[in-house]
Image 1 (cartoon, helix red, strand yellow):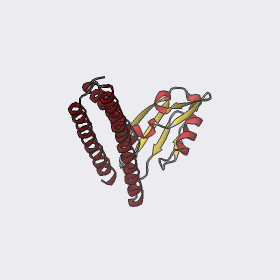
Image 2 (cartoon, helix red, strand yellow):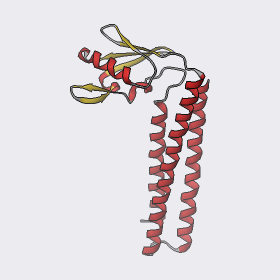
Image 3 (spheres, rainbow, N blue to C red):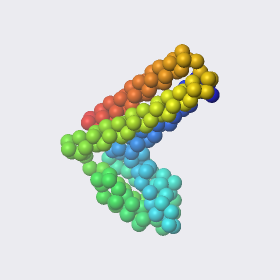
Image 4 (cartoon, rainbow, N blue to C red):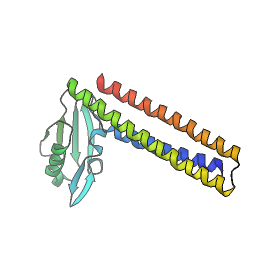
Length: 185
């Protein structure tokens, strides 16, 4: 494995970590309703936990309302139950055809808690990036030991991996700033 291969593999791993972090942050509630808020909620569909977006259409008619219309009306009660158990802070209501979720405005305390949760997710993302760096450094060390890399190439590869880590940690910070701005607005 060459130095370029190690760098490419590292970048792919960092990209996946950043993408996962983005998905986690989407599920955190801001002042506005978003279909991403219900994407991770699973409904018991004939004994199988299934994500809502595979069972129903999700629309946002107003800034603080989510309307979920199931494709199969027999799951309406299960859908309401799953939404009631979620940590969205809203009680679902249904009219026999669809479920309405009216999101109450966030209080100052709730906003602070959500911002703290975002910070926690971002720290987990940084840990994942650092784990990727550690694994890449191990591969670089193994390549040096095998004689594939010279001492200078090994040193440069470690520096490049560190530089890439700093770049991706900056992207994590940008995601955190953006999400906190949405929450606190």
